[in-house]
Structure formats: C-alpha cells, structure tokens
Image: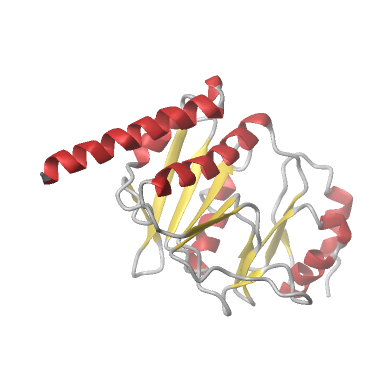
Length: 231
C-alpha cells in the first residue's frame, strides 16, 4: 500500500483539494480513517481526492436548495417515491467512487444500510441513482472533468453541475457510448427545463427560501400550461 493517505492527512488543511496518485486500497483505507469521517472522498483512474474543506455560504445555500427543488417537483407527482441523499459515497469496486453533493433515487428500491456493513452504497449490490449533482464553488474544473468521467464510468444516467460563480446549471445525459452529452431538459425529472434551474440560481442572493418559492411558482405555471394544452 502506498503512503497516499498519509500525504492527505498532512495536506488536509488545504482549501482546494487535489487529485493524487493512489491505489484502490488507499481509497478503502481512507474511508475507514476517523480523520476523514466528515470528508468527501473520490477515487477514479488511480487517483484519490479527499475534500476536507468546509462549505462556503453559496455552496451550502444551493446544496439545501437542491433538496427543496426535489421536494417541490415531486409534490406535483403524487405517489411517486423518491430518496434524496447528501454527500453519500457511491462506489463500484475497482472502478471508482465518489461522494456527490446530491444523490437522487426515483421510484423505490432505495439502498438500505445494515449494521456491520460499510457506510457506502455499493453499486454492484444496489441500482445506480437516477441523478447525481455537484455544487461547484472552487471545484468547477474537476466537476466538469474527472468527476464527470467518474460518474459516467459508474453508469449514472444524469449528472448536474451547479456553477455558482457563473450562475448556471449544466446537465448531462449518459449516452450509449458511455459518455455524457449536455441536455437542456432533465430526463430524470421528466422534462424539467435546465434553464429554469439556472434562473432559480440567480435568485440565491435573496435567500434560498425566496428562490425555492419562485421555483415552485414556475412549476405550477408549467403544470397549468400542460393541462391547458392537453384539454
């Protein structure tokens, strides 16, 4: 085993994490270390990323808004089960692992944890999430590069990146060739315009409560328009 995890302990106070060479065993060892219990851990293509940094206000604000958006959306889909997880590690042994800001399961068969098992979602045992999302404050380059390729390798069908500084949301759908292609409408959330998410993001300066209420009104308007078109 390499000394990668030791290096990360020394560098854990760095504001912006970096990918460092590591083996899968280094990743497993890091997951078991108490020092990294609150960290976000990623592994892909022989490299480990451990994010020990605290969230900034904007990151935390939109991360919470993500959850509210999911709730608002599914209130219009009465009876549709969903499960929203924050920072939970998902992994495929020897392939890769990550702890997205948001993990969304739609329609039941959610991963369940049993005492004595690792506190991670093994995608060889459970189905892949319908959607994962990253909130990018200082990590946009990696979110659009290494993490994007990681989630494609894990088979995640839809991936969102929230560019806080650019006030935009980028969405990607997994193609048959195993690569992501940018999309303008969500498939997981049945036609939700990604532009609407970007517009909601621009209201964060007024607080995520105001932004969420505005989003809810837009969803109500979309539903009314659909009903009118179908009548």
